[in-house]
Length: 542
Image 1 (cartoon, rainbow, N blue to C red):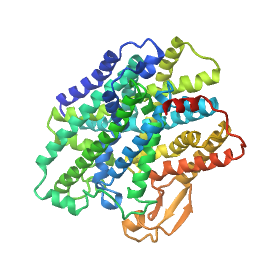
Image 2: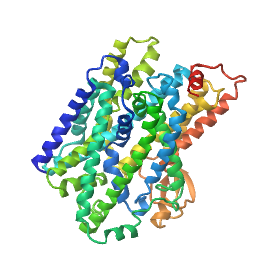
Image 3: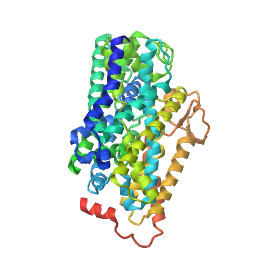
Image 4: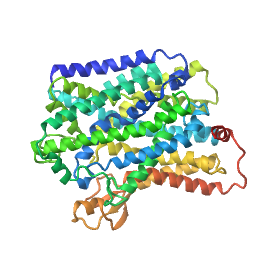
């Protein structure tokens, strides 16, 4: 990379936070800081939702998913998740959103407080905060990858720790001053930037590919959309698991995760929030398809330029498979364009969850523990304090992920989705239990929640599926049939022929455990609890 590229990247890293401060203005109330006093247009929130869930993971890692060999779930099968995402969003728009918008709530977990009590509210909120810390830690680490590649092109061997510190400071700056309004508008601008960067890459790749590349890609199953052959329990993106799991994952991520709910509650009314949420599902589908197509083009390009696998066989000297896209941008695009595209990738990273974490900490935990209602001035002050605290924790988490990621086989986008498996099922299950089982009280909800987290930890870390033979072909050995189940909590990578449960089942399984345990516990109560505030909100919405 040349000086022009670096200049573009520096201008972006400095300019985006400043632009966020300019747009957001100085927040004078906690309501404005957390949900912008419900003044943001639905289409801006729609774009912000897409940008918030996209991050650098999508831009860098989704192309790698398409690049992979078919036995590693390569091709377009990842889109099955996106079909499920659309269905899940539609359910959330009509089942959960009315409880938040018409209930005039600040966080999603305030609904649990009205339905169960403050204990359930605090439990769910703390769980969200822990899960979001881990998920956004790996997202921040992903953002450091292209910067490290850029610096390496200048002979600078910067550590991931140093890079994530700089990125964390840039992120906290505009969130601290501008609140959610700054976050939403910066999200929207950044999405336009990274999509334009992707268009530049597509044009460059199409101009460099040899004739016949499309036929070669078809023969290699790179355009395969649905996978009906893989084992539904251990396969990469088998249709049933990916579609159903994707729908449940979207219900959790967009219905009970404060990162997204906070943005939806910043719209003017329920109708606007629904439009923003449902439209975002279709935008995400198109976005996934776009970046998967880039992965197929990269596969065709490197098959011609480097016949051996550029990662596994060291053809390009890459130390991390997720550096593949960034490496192409740095080494193949002309000066100026390269810097613009890298800045677009960084744009996907600065979508901040700090405001969501701060709002959940102050309103769901601090006020409940202190047993006092804060004044608006105190709530705003504490919101800013916790914004800085969470930024520091996020930087530490990202640095730790950078330390251990070199030994992990899965693309980082798959790792990030796997993190949510521990808690998303319990979170969504607690909401559904409150809506579906009227007898369930706070004790039932908390016990069911805790049991679900324990069960999912056991399943994710300990349950392994053993293939029929260690010498079997890759499909049967990893993604096809299995002959037995074993329990193994060792931290070592699974041996050949041993697979874990595909992560798309994590959320549905967690929801099922919560509903079963909570429902059985609720049978202890003879009478239905008296109608509470949550029932009144439901009646009003209906």
